[in-house]
Length: 487
Image 1 (spheres, rainbow, N blue to C red):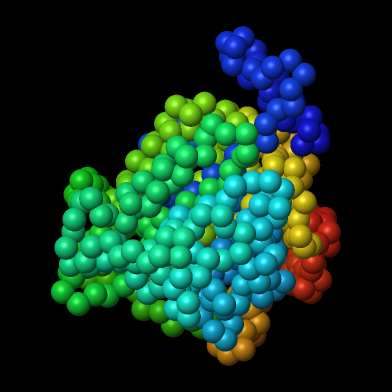
Image 2 (image 1 turned 120 degrees about the vertical axis):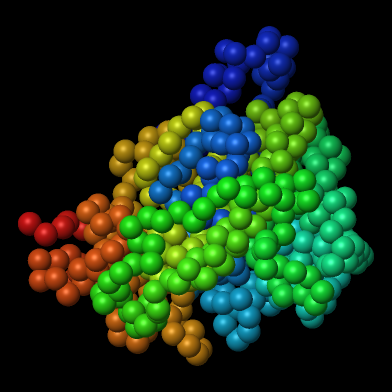
């Protein structure tokens, strides 16, 4: 079904349940929808359990893509994929810092806000952008953004004492060692997002708002600040709210036998009681920091409703990457081809996305820009590798595909390239190691079958697909034939 038909169907349903006065005048063209993207930092799928507003106001009223992954599970590459609709091997941001990546590596003139602004949208960004932003020119406003409230590195990674470039003027909020409730980073960012909506809605010109809190990413080490109990520090009103939380222990936690894994995992020690205490303390800080994001979601939805714009706004909730917390002996971090690192929430509420729908068709961050472009009827300024999720939300049955998962090749250091498909995770590491997981039989990735002769044909088929897709661009990236398992 086309985007136009989907939007028309959504308007018909809305008209059926709304008062007669709520619709547009007879013969009037429907207004283009607003778009609000809420992108948190380092949130894995399991944290959704602790966000009641996200679940009730977004998931229950929109569509959840339960099998959503990121192609490169690291901040800058992932956010660049969101902004371009391209895999990292095409947009070129292959790390968080030079020479492989960082803000300076992004070709800002060809990004989603530029295209939307050319299509008549008002645009604004609030919060974290890409690592390295502001280090060369703290007052720079990247192309495409009509209003800009971007945190300046390295202060981005402090919940107090952070500096924001506010449309060319720098403003520092508080001191890292003074936990002033009024200056908590997430709440200040939320206030700026609310102010923007209040000024731009209702209005004839639609808007695109990017809201990017730091949570639940950890804070950087700071002199005079104790981060041993909570890192990141939650809003003072939420500190201790989740003190009873304990470390989840799926079968992959502190995996006993890692002989099937690459050396970087195989050489890791077992998790000690002291290490587990650190994981738990970090987990409590991470989850409690997200409670302020959950509050912000409620405020954003309420503000849109009051302005009369809620039903004509697509709200996207997602994360740039996931996070490991003891699985496969990895006590912290990301940038690994395991589910906790790759899988992140993706919820879209708005026109064309059915309420309460749960979709298991594989989705990815490379699809975010194409979806927003589809919803807003905006052309891309370059060749995108992803696809719109709008038709998939309404008819998920026949859209199988494999997603490229990659971290290189880089100028230095190790990297990997692979495929995450509906059934398989296949990975080729730069050092020569291989991994192959049958997610249908082994969802916790406990047993790599890359050397199992029963899976030889499957491994060859996936390796052949990867050889093509690891450098794919455009339509080739979206072509897929399912890979069978052993007979």
